[in-house]
Amino acid sequence: MKIATWNINSVRLRIDQVERLLTEQAPDVLCLQEIKVAEHLFPHEMFERLGYTHRAIHGQKGYHGVATVSKVPFRDFSRHDWQDNGEARHVGVELLGAGQGLILENVYIPAGGDVPDREVNPKFGQKLDFLERMTRWADRIDRPTLIVGDFNIAPLECDVYDHKALLKVVSHTPVEVETLQRFQDAHGWVDMGRTFIPAPERNYSWWSYRSYWRQKDQGRRLDHMWASPELAPQARAHHFVEETRRWEQPSDHVPLITEFAL
Picture (cartoon, one colour):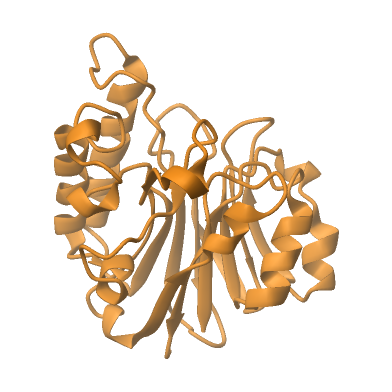
């Protein structure tokens, strides 16, 4: 089973790119973040045409939003408000049929603004609080689970193009890395990205629109796929689809795909 995740940065704007990815990579399940559309306006037709007949959408107008689309049957499992303000940032499903019993959690963690100080930047505090709520949730998980999405944190020194230069930049600050580590420890999550592409190998998933990314390669690994300890041994492959960043008007993120023998 191939499971993919992608911060698409507007599913309606980039619906043709989503179709191209599904056609070329043929994942069984695709988790999208930052769909930026309310549920009733989600572009169902293309997914239906390609056989992704099972869809769980948690959206809102213009911002945030997540969607999980699948060829494999599933049931809606959870929708947590880890932001504690009603924003659409999570949807969880339980796979049925092939992969039966696997819980697939799709999350879009807040970016956290520009200043890494909760006293002057409330968004940064909201990000840390979001992660703390996730950590309390992870401590109680008792099912094989895969959590995927845009975590908006590059945890390792080699997950950014310049560790020292980014230590005070939101997404790579020590407090964010430590907070994410507590979340990882709460369930013993196994990082698929670094299981198959070991540190310090280059493994970026995001490049800012503000830099000419192919020339400078100023990337960060902000997107992740983490598996429960009992699920991780069933993973067989993992890769990132960097060519999407070269497409016309691309998302600033690229997809990740993990293959499992379930």
